[in-house]
Length: 268
Image (tube, rainbow, N blue to C red; front, side, top):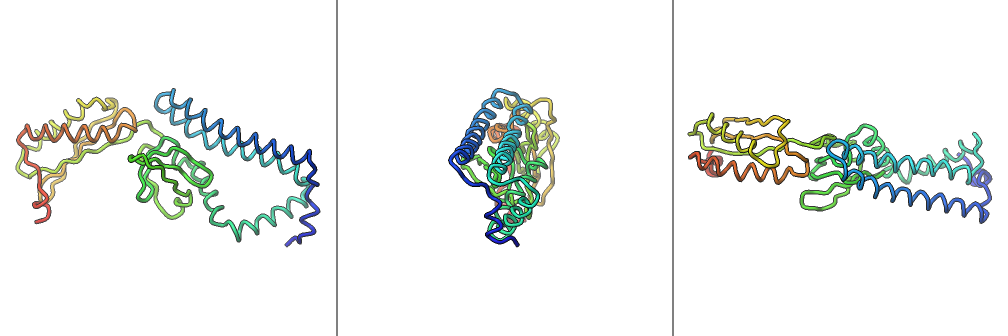
């Protein structure tokens, strides 16, 4: 392990000119990161579908690239870039990181893995544990998720190491929405399926190029129907589900169908 004297000898003298240059690098890095984080969403909001998600997903890559360039510009100013000096510095930094910052570094590595493997991107709707919402910002250590209740939740990337991440749209502009209906067993299933398909097909939120599907499963207490369809945009999912649920319930009542009750399910 290198001693303090050996480490001290590899650093350049910090004169005013050098400090000014380092300060300019830091300021330029911060300004560029802020600029990209403002410009990229502005550009994305003016693009349709996949192009919008592609631009949003590129934001963390630009930020990481800016930071890497800044580090490589600052290192030669602080130390003489020789093999001996790099071995000494990396050895010292590695020990410090290993003992003091292992959890933080684990989060940073997980962030790089998440970005590299496209586990989630800006604009994706993901479920991480009890948190479900839209990915709005991918930082080096955490991912910022905005929930349907408009709460901002920060989840560490290290969540990836031991837990599953459910990505509802995986980079697509649309995601599948499901409206559930629970009916008494005495009804015409073919009529119910046709009615539910019509409900989805007449929704103003429906994306027509993707299929509408009605699934039925017989339970001891009745029949469980799942109406599956895709909205035009992922952000419309809750309004779309509400629209299908409200109009589907009204259409089934007009059909004379009887809904299963909680007492029926409890007794079975």
